[in-house]
Length: 180
Image 1 (cartoon, one colour):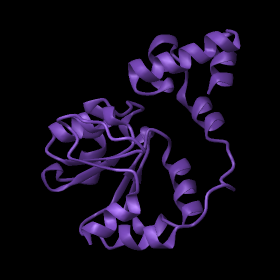
Image 2 (cartoon, one colour; image 1 turned 180 degrees about the vertical axis):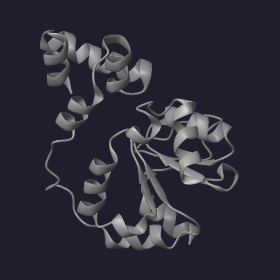
Image 3 (cartoon, one colour; image 1 turned 90 degrees about the vertical axis):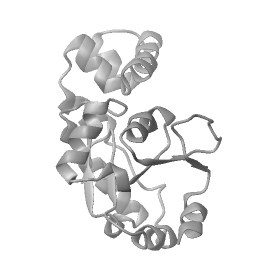
């Protein structure tokens, strides 16, 4: 990401790294900041930052079974692209556990945590937020789903106390096993 910012904006590494973090904090993603402040085309950015290897990811059949065993539709919604997320799911052996996959492109490049992004994806999927749960590693991305009536689960090493977080886990598999 920093390299892309350097090239797109013609700035040095220190400035690019600062802007990368600033845009993420301010807009939810580095891409959103680049688009809003510099009218950057999202396609080259998304292609470059998602051109990575998945060799370090291992399949997790136990997690796949736990997710598959949950009631209702299971979707992935990411600030990355749907093709990128599909590669991650395939590398982890989780692709069959989900019914649908949505990327930032499905929200017209509006990122989580923007309410409009969630509304676009949930409308497209037909998600009834009153009967759904959102699992997320970034606490900012749980605020709007909570406001929309969803149960929220923060998945991260350290808990974060906030009214918009119903549950926290540092081990998704153990959390899901307790549900089923």
